[in-house]
Structure formats: structure tokens, C-alpha cells
Amino acid sequence: MSKRYESLKHWLSEILETSDFELKPASEDASFRSYYRLFLQDKTFIVMDAPPPQEDCKPFVKVTNALLACETNVPTIHNLDLDQGFLLLDDFGDDLYLDKLNSSSANKLYSDAISALAEFQILAEVKELDDYNEPLLRREMRLFTEWLLGKHLKVELSNAQTNSMALLFDTLVDNAQQQPQTFVHRDFHSRNLMITKANNPGIIDYQDAVNGPISYDLVSLLKDCYIKWSKNEINGWLEYYLNQLSQRGFEVDREQFQRWFDLMGVQRHLKASGIFARLSHRDGKHEYLKDVPRTLSYIIDLQEDYQELVPLCLIIEEFVLPKLEET
Image 1 (cartoon, rainbow, N blue to C red):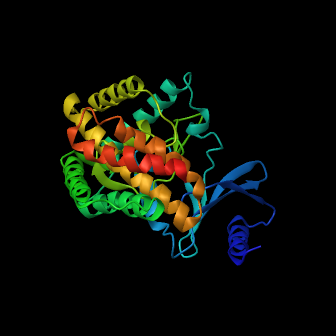
Image 2 (image 1 turned 90 degrees about the vertical axis):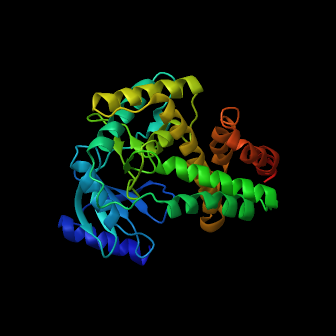
Image 3 (image 1 turned 120 degrees about the vertical axis):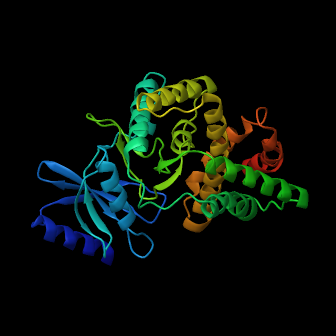
């Protein structure tokens, strides 16, 4: 038993004033954080273990308070020790959206998630959040070239390909910055949404929230790296989202939003595929590599509608996907 685990149990014993509880691992996470389910009499809680200096709990606390203020269904923090990186939270259970999504459940679950998204986009306070600025957008996209192309696949781009990627990055940054800026969860997808009996969904893993492009979270939700829906289904949910915004007094041009949404997805999927490669090589979490082809397929799907994506799609189709099949 590790020294940190012993420290966690000691902290819990002090705040609960009893050692008569049970801890069990609760979930995997693509970070240094660990989660446990705490059983205490007839109640359960989630314990977050976020070891400093790899993880900083202060952003989680700050964003939790911002979301609770607009009645978003996020875990209440019952106790915390920021110096040690320990938090005691509400338990939303085990019903991940990803595990329950199917053709019968999708409309209801996505309608709930989209309604919650529109609500916190309109209401959540963003003044204390970092901006989703140009350096961050570019740093994220470079994960694709540095970790997926370079580190994982050993692909060396030609000068012409490098230049075309640079032009595309410029386009994607401009697309993000010209959008209305709002609260961005940044990982609003089926592995971070929990099915709850009241005020569905329960929303988790929002500590990296920023003030950024309005289309970003909707892309995360509807063009999910872990589950894929048809174009018609995605368009239907997009319409529902725009109606939700309109009901809250926020009007967006449909055609303009479609471009924002599509190109924002390209930025996100470049980032995500690079992160999956980094998780494999840096952290030994190889299981994420199987999600790369699905993630990149969203970019391929757009090449007939956006001429500026053709050079990237050629790289993906001619170099990336064949090499992924070999690894």
C-alpha cells in the first residue's frame, strides 16, 4: 500500500471522524488523477486524488463553484485539502453516457446534455477563466504533428506539406477567434457525462474550462472521439442546440455556425489524436490509440465541403491511417 494512499485514508478518517469506511477504485482517467468510491454506512461519495505538483485542484474548485452558481449538475465538494490534492465529492453513480447511448436512448440523452450546455454557456461566469487564446489553440494542434505524426508514426512532412499545415492552423485559429466567446468545458463528451435521476446529466472533469469558442463543447459532444453518429443525426441535434440558444435570447446564423462547428471540430480532432498518441508513449495508456481512426474520420468527412482541408486529408489518408493499421 502506497504512502499516498495511506495519507488519503488518514485524511478521510479525520474529516469523517471514523475509519469505518471502504474505498474502491472508481474510474480510469487520462491524467494523473485517481478516483475512489467511498462507502460510508448507507452513503457513497467520490474521492478525488490529484497529486501535486502534477495536478492542481484549485481550477476544479473554481469551476465547480461557477457551474453550481448557474444550477448546472456538477458534484458538490463536501471537503477538500488543496495542499495534498484530496477532495470528497458527490457520487453520480456508474452510468456513463457512453455505456448507455444507443439508437433508442440517444435523442433523450443528447437533448438533456444540449439543454445543460446552452444553459451554462449563457449563465456561467467566465471572468476568472483563462482565455482559449491563439498560443493554446496552436499548442494543441501541434500535438498532432509532434506526437502522432512524429513520435508515434515517424512521419516526416515535406516542405509543401508543412506549409499547408501552417496555413490550415492559421485558418483554424481565425475560425475559433471569430466566434462568440463563452464558457467552454473543454471535454464535454460521453465519458464525462453521467446519467442522473434528477437534472440529467451529471457533468464531471471540467477543471480545464476556459473562456472560448461557442461551438467547441457542441463539437466535443456530437463529434465524440468515443462514439460516432450519422451526419443527419448530428445535424438534428445541432438544430436543437440552436433552438435552445434562441429560447435563451441568443441568436446565431445557421450557416455561419455550421462553418464554426465543422472547423472547430478539425482543431479538436487534431488535438485529440495527438493526445491519444501522447498518452500511449508518455503514460503507457495504449488503449487510446484505437480511438485515433474514429477521431480523424471526422476530418475526412469534411473534405468535400472545405477545400482548405484537402492537404490535411491527403496526409491522413495516405500516411496516417495506413501506418496506424501497421502498428
